[in-house]
Image 1: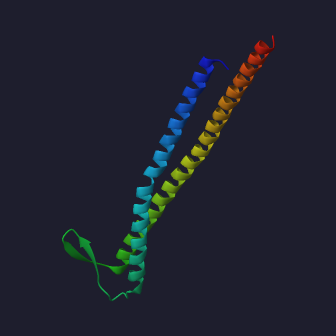
Image 2 (image 1 turned 45 degrees about the horizontal axis):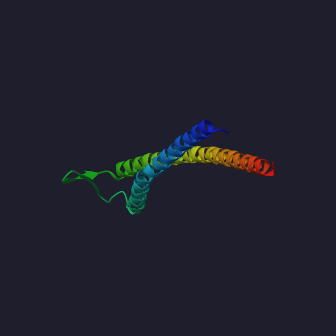
Image 3 (image 1 turned 45 degrees about the vertical axis):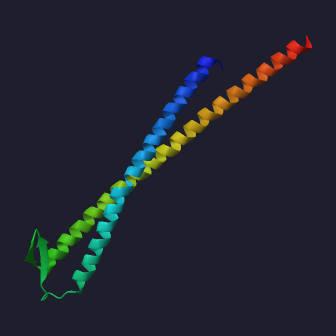
Length: 140
């Protein structure tokens, strides 16, 4: 491998490493929304448990701005169940994105390792050729 080919491979390797870094950054950016949805899901599951303890005669109030508004128990349960459903869908979507990014990262790491191995092999061959040339020159 001559110098220009080595430089091309080095440039390709750098581009692939940048892609890998971008994927890692993208995966990391999913952590906060996931954490937020997990917290909201846990809170709403707690609310549902509390609502399940109530009887039909108990009064439920919903905070709307600065006011507490009377709400039917079944409506309150339905609203909370809907929110739980939305949070679960969002978490599933985030997990799917993270899994897809993880697969892309694995493939990119394999590609980078292959490029690195090619470069190491080419360098070793160049060193061997140089040593052979020096031995041949020294013996003549």
